[in-house]
Amino acid sequence: MSLLAIGTLAYDTVETVQEKREDQLGGSAVYFAVAAAPFARPRLVGVVGKDFERGDIARLESCGIDCAGVEVAEGATFRWGGRYEADWNTRVTTFTHLNVFESFDPKVPEHYRDSAFVFLANAHPEVQLKALLQVERPTFTLADTMNLWIDVARPALDELLRHVDGLILNDEEARMLTGERNLIRAAQQVLGLGPRYVILKKGEHGAFLMGGDAHFSLPAYPVTDVVDPTGAGDSFAGGFMGYLAERGSVAPDSLRAAMLYGTVTASFCVQGFSIEDLSRRGRRDVEERASDLKSIVTL
Ligand code: AMP
Image 1 (cartoon, rainbow, N blue to C red):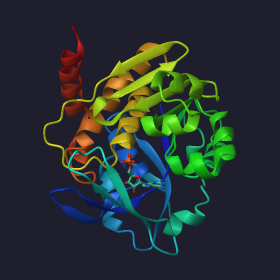
Image 2 (image 1 turned 120 degrees about the vertical axis):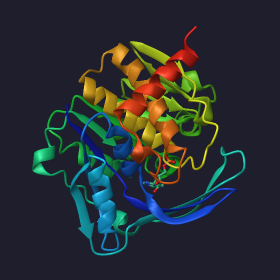
Image 3 (image 1 turned 90 degrees about the vertical axis):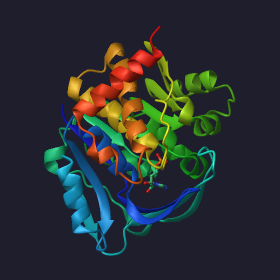
């Protein structure tokens, strides 16, 4: 079934203990779409500036992503910088230049409005809702958010949460959103805000899914050669939603399997800078690593 992603296309500057890379292709919707591409043909809605390389659009299209919803606006592309400490868990945002994303007014093209599965990547919740309301009758909608919006746009975020089926967030954001330190209780409280499902990401410790009819937890795939964790959360969401769209189901067993596939696509993402590793992976690579992960977690 069809899959739509709305969010940033970016040029990121990433610094790790080993290396610094400037202006490399990133953005939450980009990571999501590349991770989802082995399962479905993602439709992408976002905005870039006149400086966005044509070759990068071609690169996304060659991954099987439909870029007809990417608008080119006057100005510069969204830019973000991050620096990782040696333990990979601490990330400092060095800059965020919204540029053309600051006045992003999402326009979902007519032929995308029938999309069944929708991912609202990190953006102001009013922008996320504006995009969502243009989709006619989505089967399943998943939203991401961040501490900034919990802090400065809480009423808009609360309104968004009444319109989505799932929310994906990390442990720190869940605590901030609910004021609850225990993550299970925090997840239960998020369910009280509207979504039927919540996915909590705990970095290298994995992720868990909670909903009325599903409670499932998985460790991260044990990657020995982490290169750059940027985009891991969005790549998780891409594998998760891509699998659901491929299967055309949101039954509890599909959601559990989708958690496995999200874990796999996130693990490819961290093995390279930008989309270097992720974009090389096909359905067969995904399946191989999924069986490996299954064997690791099964008694
Ligand atoms: P993650 O590592 O999953 O948090 O995703 C990082 C990606 O999100 C990078 O490629 C950034 O370009 C993008 N990003 C960072 N900050 C924002 C923001 N405020 N809004 C939208 N996208 C962002």
